[in-house]
Length: 414
Image (cartoon, rainbow, N blue to C red; front, side, top):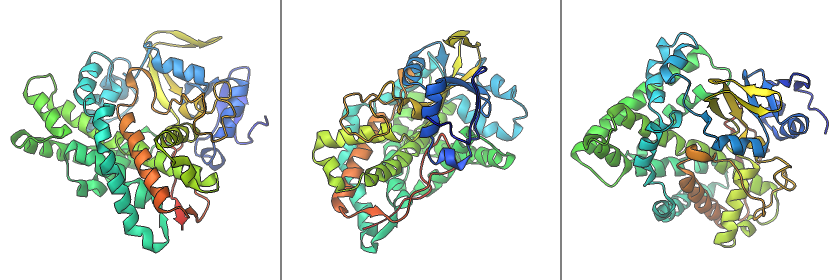
């Protein structure tokens, strides 16, 4: 395969120079992935300052390897303080330090156990009628227009409404929650500015105050929602303090919609690109499930996820990651590795080698995976049944956010 012109790779040292803001790359990273997999699926990406793994076998194995964890070496605060001045990120750091996503057992186990009961498949399945109802309501709102941008009109409001209702906060606060979430997740991206950091910190402060206020209300007026569950756990001495409650609620709200919005948009684009009647992908439950799984593999919403080495470990011949070092696992590349998937760049629902890692693996496997799958199954089926003449009004463009791989807009007509 021809080397993409926008990357520079030194085979002897396995050093890669590739600007993640290069449009040719973030608009379609798959040719670069394929070329790198042929050269070396393990490489040092200088722009990120860390070793990366791009093979399915490597990514899947390291996601499950307990020698590579999410917890920052020495603890969150000592680690981030060692990176430089952080006074302007006090509120953001307070949330991150207590997030289960950034922790390892036993604290991770305790926090995850508290919220896991709401996200098991049998509990989530009860939400299918609500997801279908919301999909119909969104289409009702724009069907007569004959044209819409499906990112704000369809992909965004469904998951934010469902996770807000599950948590127990007013769904009408959705736009405010989205604003806070978008400003916070910028912190996980490449090329931060001081302005971005200060905006993220203010969003974390406002978000935290919001959750504390609603938690106080739930303490005196408990309901059948996640915030009441977390508040009860705090009040009954299950070792959940208020900061952990706030961090858990913010994580669930952020994670409960961010990736699903991207994946829904990516999936609609992918399906429309296949041509023909899209309803053929949703003829029954089995076809719907297979289609959603292939969408998750084919164009995933998250392309990188990091881990920290607990101790020195060789990850490839001659490549040793030292204890405390960060490593990036390239989920989007792993999902399209020809060593793991037949014709990986072809869209094949029901493929026998379906084993995508879009939700991760191991103890940090995405807690909201059953919910995200259900939302997509319900909403996509309704969309293509209601609008069988749906087609792209323009070629969709991806946002310059690289590893949060989602569309800038998705203009369609019917």
